[in-house]
Length: 281
Image 1 (cartoon, rainbow, N blue to C red):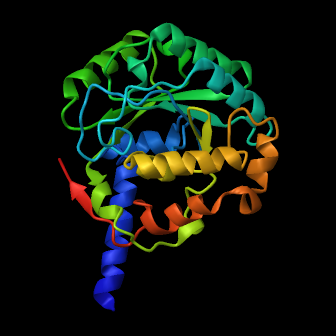
Image 2: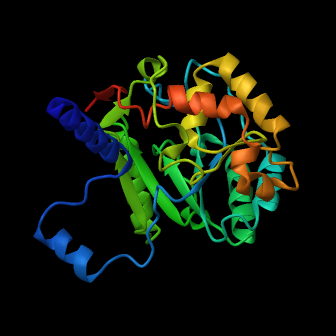
């Protein structure tokens, strides 16, 4: 019994390490955090996602976005615009996190237009990047540098880039731990829709709106699950092109298809007490 409790809290700590980077150590960083906190801060747990593409310049074995070598797909401008239009009123002022794949690998003119669409509707933008390519940071409100341990040179370029642009609103998300998704997909029983990510990070991939990015990433690992779940969500109104999308989301207990609940309760890698966390750095 005691060992199970210890293991539970160890697993929770590992998840926190994955999603929340450790603070800078030392006396001076401590003083700055207490007496000079940042005016704005991006909360990774409180965002809605825009998955722009499904390709990257890295091939991390545990990346749920890349999965089993998916095709180099992209979300279209029309899908993004429809989503932003039909989601308006659900969560005013939320930050949309642009991610992928690697979002900076998208054509930069298209990326700029997406940022403009987000800003036109009164939302802010956050970019989760591995530093693959530099972009004009005036498009982005928050920068998150995703450190993998194999992209230090790219991260260093971004640091210099931000300093030259006199931008200091950025954070690290050091991936000290990765979930072992193939292991986590072996029908682990979880608490289903009770986790903290459910409905806090609505995610657009193509025209399908997923209730959380964990559900979407696990689906990406299996083409059959991906197609079945995407079709069920579309049929239930979870689509960027649904003019009643806000009502569909607000009444999620009635509108979410059973396939979503099933996948959530059996294969979610984040909330499963039996999920293996693999240290890679």
